[in-house]
Length: 162
Ligand SMILES: NC(=O)c1ccc[n+]([C@@H]2O[C@H](COP(=O)([O-])OP(=O)(O)OC[C@H]3O[C@@H](n4cnc5c(N)ncnc54)[C@H](OP(=O)(O)O)[C@@H]3O)[C@@H](O)[C@H]2O)c1
Image (cartoon, rainbow, N blue to C red):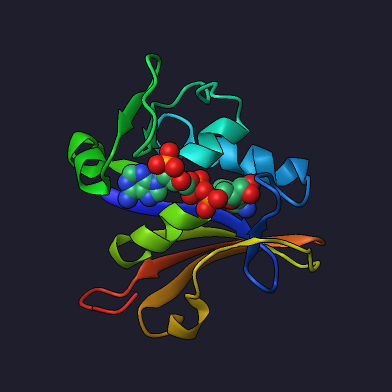
C-alpha cells in the first residue's frame, strides 16, 4: 500500500483557520477530486466535521477519532488499526488535518502538495518537510499555475528521516 499525504499549504505551511480552509481555489478542489477519486481517504475527526460528516463520494472515507464513532463511516481510534484495515489498497490518501499529517509524515511514501503562493493567517500547519527536499523527498512532478503550483514528492528509497 502506498500512503500519500495530499494537502494545500501557503508559503508558511498554513493549512487551516478556525476549523476550515483559509482560501477557496476551485481548481485545487478539482485537482483534489481527480487525484483521489477511486481511492480510500483517511482523515481526522475535525476534517470529517468540516465536511458536515458527509463522506466524499466515490471514495471510501475512513475517520480517526478517539472520542466518536459514526454509523455511516469506518472510524478507528488508532492510526495502526486504520492502516491495517486499509492495507490491501494500492493507494491511500491522507487528507488531513494538521494532527493527522503530523503523525503520518514519517510513514508517507508520497506527498501531493498544492503550494499556494499568497500568504494567509492560520492556526493549523502542515509539518515541516521542505528542509528534507533533496534528501528524504524528491520532487517528481510539478505543474505551475498563477496562484499555486501542484507538486509531487516521492520518498527517496532507503531514507529514514521524514
Ligand atoms: N489545506 C489543506 O490541505 C487541509 C487539509 C485538511 C484539513 N485542513 C485544515 O486543518 C484543520 C483541521 O486539522 P486539525 O489538526 O485541527 O484536526 P484533524 O487532524 O482533522 O483531526 C484531529 C482529530 O483527529 C483525531 N485523532 C488525531 N490523532 C488520532 C489518532 N492517533 N488516533 C485516533 N484519532 C486521532 C482526534 O479526534 P477526537 O478528538 O474525536 O479524538 C483529533 O481531535 C482545519 O482547519 C482544516 O480546514 C487543511
